[in-house]
Every structure is written in C-alpha cells, then in structure tokens.
Amino acid sequence: VADASHELRAPLTVLHTRAQVLAQRLDSGHLTAAATDAGALVADTRVLADIVDGLLASASMAEVGSEMTRVDLSAVAHSICVRMTAYAESIGVRINCEGNADHNPGSLDVLGSEVSLERALTALVDNALSHEKVGGTVDLRVWRDGQQVIAAVADDGEGIDKAALPHVFDRFARGEGHTTRAGRPSYGIGLSLVREIVQAHGGDIRVSSTLGQGATFTISLPAAPASAVSRQTGPSSR
Image 1 (tube, rainbow, N blue to C red):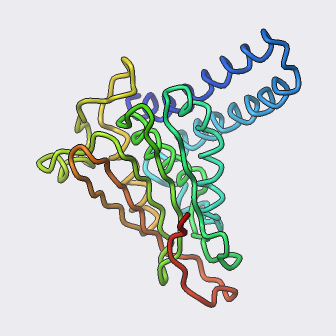
Image 2: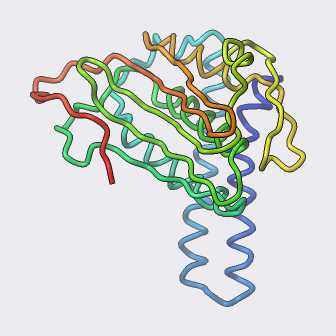
C-alpha cells in the first residue's frame, strides 16, 4: 500500500495541476488552448492507468523479465518533461530536458520495461522538484557513454547532507526540508523503488550532492545491441 501510494502521488499531482489549468482556460474563454490541455489530460490518465498496471505486475519486478522490449530512453525522458512541465511551472521551477540531438538511431535504446523505466525517471524528477527552490531548474539529460546509456536528473536546490548520502536509497529513509512539497509528506520509499527498477534492468544508480548546491542522480543502463551505433557521444550542451 505504501509503495502504491507513493507511485500514484506524483502522477496524480500532475493530473490535478493539468485539470486546474484546463479549468482556467475554460473560464477565460481560451477554447483552443483548452482543447490542447484536454488532450493532454486524457494522455495523463493513460499514464496513470499504465502505472497502476505496472504496480500490479511488478511486486517483484517480474514484468522486467517478461517484457524485455526495446526502449528509447531519450523519448521516455522527453515524455516525462512534457507531462510534468505544468506542475513544475505551478511551483516556480523550470524543467530542462536534453538528449543527444545528433545521436544515431537506436543508440539511446535499452532493453527492459518501458513502464518501469518511466516510473523510475518520473520518481527522480518528482524528488528533484520537491527539493528545488522557486526559480530553480531541474535538468533531465540522456546520453551514450560506451556501452552504457546514461540518464541524469540534476537540481540546484538544497542538496543532501554528506552524512545522509549513503542512506538515500534505504527503504523508508526520510529526507528533510522539502522546499516545494507544501504539506506533501515524504516516506522515503521512492528512491528505494528506483534502485530496485534500475538493478532489475542490470543497471546502476548513484548520487552526488553538495549541501546547498543541489543533487544529481545518475542512472547507467546497458545499451541495447544495435548495428547502427557507430560512434560514442557525450552529453549535449547549450
């Protein structure tokens, strides 16, 4: 129940924010924008249904072994950024999504469960937003490094105390000082679940942080075999 509650909280917050924006559009008579928001709202409900299906199937990460499909991690990251932008803007935070614009087709693909990987990255973005300051930025980047596909979620918020770093992935470890959660309690389950998903995909997750300067969570996953991949690329820059 605790796992399900945590996994559903972030998408429900996004869904609630989207509904509020839609209501404002309708009140102000902006019907074209409202139609766009309504379409996004429908898409959000589909995402919520996927999460519920994933929770039912993944009590022991069983779906990873039974649904090993090819997943474009860059496309997953972009979808998350689009879906969570309205919520981020509502708390005064900007989401910046970057992928290798010039990457070879398939070079950012991994093998696994798209639903589970989306859950993991969504949880990391939600965690970053909850520790971010108003006016801050959350960066979600995906790039190729040798035989690994890397996804990193970074914020410039409050950071993590050095003594707490070894315990951030412990089950029920509780982070303090959520800056934008506004009454939403943290039960410390999310990061533990993220690690379970990453490890079930044969990957690794690590965190680096400087107190007062933000934190970066980095996921490394084995790249899917692809004959089209011919060169190594690094993180894009602006």
